[in-house]
Length: 578
Ligand code: TEU
Image (cartoon, rainbow, N blue to C red; front, side):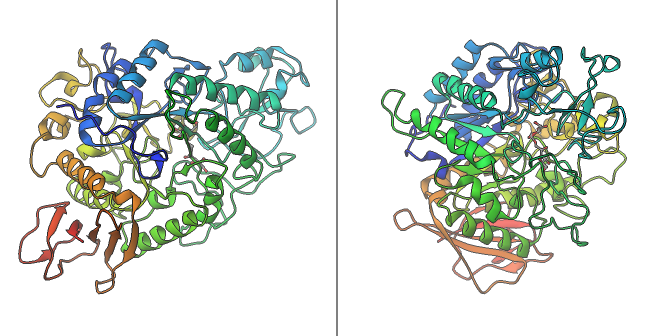
């Protein structure tokens, strides 16, 4: 079935858009090598149109040695042969637009791959040269420069500096060090260098000219480092985004301390100039007037700090990781939703909502953990395993209340199938650099990156024509396959479709929200409203026992079968006719 949307309903489409994240290596494989590709995505775009999303965000597909699954870019203006060609990218864009889907691509400006021509030139050049000045090369400390220039650690574990000397095979012998907040194959660019700024702006224009509708900006809070790269007593953790060992004892993230490598005021000038680049393209294609969007991947707290990224002349959106990192707790959700709407309204930006992505344990598994909603950096087979059924029940409930919230929502591929994390991956198939750099202390992110099951009865569950998959899929995934759920009442896929249909029909993303009194603390209860389209009443029961539904309740959608008798069981969300 192909559903073509009303194309491009408003100029500021991103204010209410549901944006579906495609992780190219794991979405669909057309050429049979077991790794997803652009042609595979294009062939499956009908699934996304039928699902009812507004836009697609593609994780990086650029030329890359794939040390960090493409977040290590060697050439920003080409497609990696693993994923296809520039012509395949053009075909994808054309087909998506035909279906009324906008396309957001990933931009990785904080670092390049060490195989980027710039970094290779930097290694070949002398300290102090213009080639070195595009990155953060420094002399080491200690008598012979044998100690790293400061004490920063990599987000993936280990120190954030690597020394160039013949023994590391880097080709340089002067013994300088270069900074990498992530893997050693991901050297950080120096954003105080005008050449770096000009180059990345040109990259934006390259993709805008090809017709992309926006960019998801990787590590948007990291581009500018504090002057002098001062030592810091803290440590940055992957996935949970917590940054300070001096954090409050209750485990909450400290309010403002983010370290000298993150959330420096200087980043905002960069986004102001990018915004001007995007604005050049408003109306540039076929005279169509709609704005291209920038979305910040910035692990910044509190939300009032995050709101600075989406001021009027900066980006349009920022991921709401405070929402993603909430535990399964009604009071916590009420607080984060209230605070999100308050701080983003204050700058005129839409709130965004997200529960899963390619860096975190899938929410269907997080909510099935002993502490539901806690967020380990991956799970090993030897770890206590999540309760799959409970996790899925809560995930469906969480998604259903998320999709009623005003603003824009992000979905991660496979969550519409209710996919859990692969929590029993054999260690010898893991690829995430975080697993290696932490010396296997963290399982890392491979478990949320397993190829998608499309067809229950086919090898590799239809991911690839040969049945190959770059990571193994659990045998139990036949039940989650898209073809096993399509048209099946009560399936997770049909729940997502129904919710997205109602969301669109009732313009929920564009509405406001009011909290409803009269329910117990364990119930997230709100009414969405919009004068011209009508709203819904949303009740999410996060408590342990059933609660009574209002006497006159007319149920529009429920995240699980209701028992009748006018009750809302535990871990279920309903939308009621407003
Ligand atoms: O992730 C950034 C990242 O690792 C954050 O989750 C991190 O916890 C935060 O910066 C700490 O404050 C992005 C990509 O999503 C990820 O896949 C890449 O591996 C990474 O950047 C490097 O490009």
